[in-house]
Length: 68
Image (cartoon, rainbow, N blue to C red):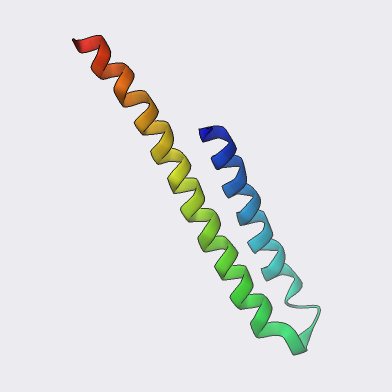
């Protein structure tokens, strides 16, 4: 599950990068592409952080069980 979340976050960051790269091709939608690019970069970053959090939480119960 955590790998799926991480790969989804990477895909969202790629989408944000694509939005930021395409802003140079259409001057009339420049601000929309910039806003969308930063939005998707932020969402991708949050998704990756969530993936790392899930991975960390999945490892903690195993360690607690070993200490008992």
